[in-house]
Amino acid sequence: MAGFVVAFFLSYGFGLLYSLFVYWLDRYEKEPKLLVGGVFLWGSTVAVIGALVIELIIGAGSSIFLGSGLLNDLFSGSASAPLAEEALKSAAVLLVFILFYKEFDSVLDGIVYAAITALGFAAAENLLYLFTTYTEEGWQGLFILFGLRVIVGAWAHPLYTALFGIGLAMARNTRSIAIKIFAPLLGLAMGMFLHGFDNGVLIVGNDLWALLVATAVEWLGWIFIIGVAFWALWREGSWIKQYLREEVDLGIMSPAQYQTASSVWRQFTSSFRALTSGKMLATGRFYQVCGDLAHKKRQMASLGETSHQKEIEKLRAELASLAARASD
Image (cartoon, rainbow, N blue to C red):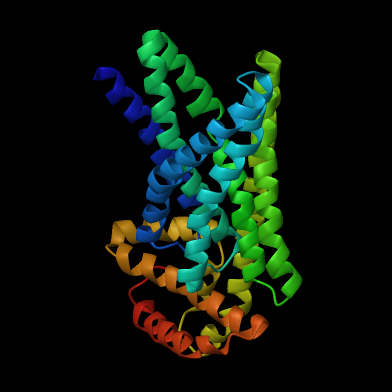
């Protein structure tokens, strides 16, 4: 029982901690907490159980044709596991994209939903591996595996699935039919390929060098994702500057609030001042509305989504009601 409790705490505790970091990255327009929690739960339940069932079925068939040796292990690790796991993790991101289309505004949104889904999947998978290792090798085996999977290999699953999230976000923010079709498919294919490559290296190499190669691929890939996230933050800041200039001219928000709305650093300092002056809730909501309004105005102007007009007026009215109570 103690082994299971420790394995659960280490797997889900770090999974939630990493998810908070990913959620924190989205500075200008936070995604709804219920949706973010929902994709984490999908990853840790539906995706894990579904992948396990699919892999068991495929594994039973492949063992008949390939036997129980290296070739079958390579097929399972490099083909069936990446296909099943990435398809089921990506399904959560696709559902958000379809059912909550208005919440899917930028590349950063795609990264957030995809990475947090994958972190939920990794938490459940790590729990299974850590507890199994504990029953076979005791505490030493559990903590060694914890270091390898939860610390060193923490960002493998988020990397694979984030590529699909980026592809969906690219489709969301273009009028090109070709990009709408092929960007998500390319992102999914790249995620599956990297997943299969990493597994294959570990299966064939099965030594320290193989671990180093797989880890290098994972961390270099995640550094790339973080780079894309910071580029997306810069881009969102420029959109806010472009599309909220009108609100300043109309007197809905002050020039100081306008400058704060488009700056991550100024929002940090504004939040601190709001905390000490009792304006925390109004300030947080004010800058969230700024992000929402800028995205809707951009989508109407550049993507022709005229259906946003009523929502724009609603957000503008809310912004006006909050301005006097929000810190600049």
